[in-house]
Length: 297
Image 1: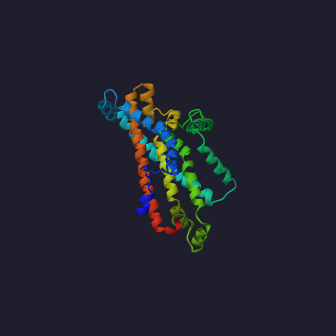
Image 2 (image 1 turned 90 degrees about the horizontal axis):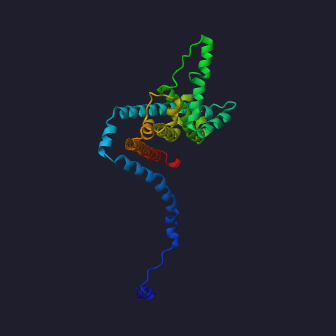
Image 3 (image 1 turned 135 degrees about the vertical axis):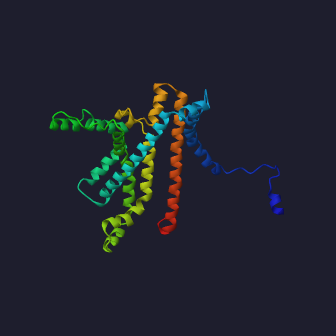
């Protein structure tokens, strides 16, 4: 103890802090500033605009309006139907590409990757050229039937859902392909040698390994469909009014910025709530898998 006191600095100066200890904090500052400027500040501005002027009366008028309630229900219906359709179609495509090899399967996989890089309105334009009133399919039907053009679903909720399923399905296919690639081929061979049918192998061996990827893809599709604007706008479905379309109408068409800010705040809360719910469920799934398969983690 005496030796320690003798070696102490007589000036009473504090020991220098190791610069390596502060380096991680300095590296974290630029990304934090970017998030504050790009994400947090606009959200705070939207929230402040929603309470400006009449304040709570704006919230009451917007939330209590029939148009908002219908838009909320329409948005939820389209998002859920799109998610279900993308999960079903994406799972089928991923299973075929992974376990049913055929000539050109690699090319199909590359095309699916290409769709991920395209803007959503291009899918809608393709649907318009194919299934629109003056589209190729209706032209063929009119030629065969003698003038009638029966397909008119593109400007309806059905057309919006089909276009969104077409665009968002690759977001399910890609994670599933990655998950299927990690399934050992030996497990499939052993299950088949024990007499298990292909459906049983798929349900008992393959899909349990793919649940996290399936859930991740489905959650991503649900969030994207909830906030999709371009597909709804380009289909020309006037009776399909979703929350993003209503925000656009309030903010750009009628220039009701406080009302648009209220709707945008609700949209942000819905998106963050769904994301938080996904993180909670996903964390629980990973914990359960780690408990049941400790060697795989």
